[in-house]
Image 1 (cartoon, one colour):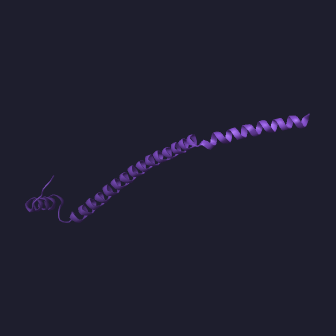
Image 2: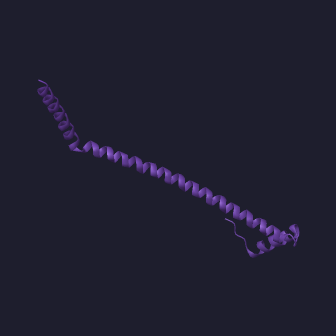
Image 3: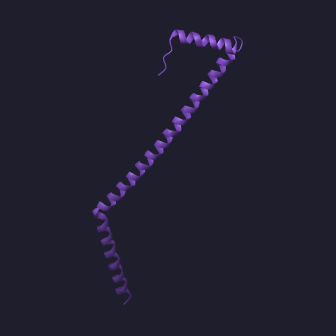
Length: 103
């Protein structure tokens, strides 16, 4: 993108020395360093927040898939209907026994 040669770098240093002055160069370098550190922190925080959002969405998808699989398992389980029939027969027999005892 940008290609700086030695001549461009030397020219930039000379212009900075003339514009800023030799006494203020350390302060300028400190400000540039702190600005760079701030930009890195902001970009790191932004990246972390995007990763957290992606993980949340992935977890929601996984939870939905698990619940769908549980529903499919319950639908395919043949013992569910069998248990319902046995409980129905048990209730019917129990009510018949109670009616016989009452008489």
